[in-house]
Image (tube, rainbow over the protein chains, first blue to last red):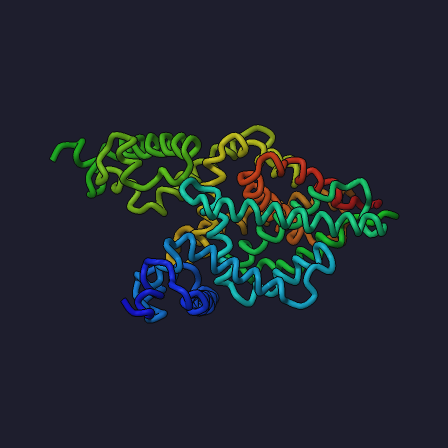
Length: 205
Length: 205
């Protein structure tokens, strides 16, 4: 068994194979993000992905044993890249607005997110469920912290529950992406999120 | 070919068969709403539904040729029953709050809705896409009308765009259902929709 075969096979990579395996994994994710952005998530059955990447189905399954794991990895990688985007997390709702605006450019990733959300609330996708549950929990906590800081500074009225307000902002952003994707001429998600921002009362309102 | 076989076969029902066909169709939808409410949408492959109903796969396909058509019909039937629920459409956001509260009792229908939304934004589900697109369009128009009436009465500030505010309310309600389904202890969708209601400024604010 050569090193090549070992890297692409079902057994764990041997000494020296780790870096190579990590590189191959990163290449697959790179290509997948491009594919999902261009063609949407329906193009992402394991077999068609393997075909598009010019690797065997077995090689792909070595890195991503199931479609759920592949879709999750693609979304996680997208999130990591998002984290590195400029101006991240400077203001609460404003941040989601920027993120929504970047997502507009890659409808495929909005489709992927909607698929993960739908899978997460069904039976039979435990990894997706855990991922989405933790994602929402973390997002609510992060956003609630920014909101609490805005409340301390008098920019948001102090009696509003920061976690509830965070849930509201995240829900609005998620729901608007679906409406926008179905009817881009009728719904401008960024404008509606600006509307939400504008009606959150300041301390002296 | 007997009348029975004709009703359950792939050919159109003969004279006298129409009422019978409509009754059988209604029975299937009745049973499906119960199944989806109890077990979620994953239990709804055409074959498992046929098994559960004690009819043949061919008989089920006579009424619902594809899984998409079956899921759409179940959701439409659910919507029709919702329309008959008391206190429908008395106030804008309040109405969505009541609807969300009724949906809490049937997580399977929230799962079904999330599945339809995810299918609608993918390629390959044109009927679902059309249905959801029209559903959002109608909901936005209905809600915007209520909001405009509230604005005329001074209950909502007149400079807010009624359609954008409608998009916001629908998006918040949809997004909150997903967060609630994944983490019912952390997210109270009704309370968060009340929060949204409370921050929409009145004319004299």
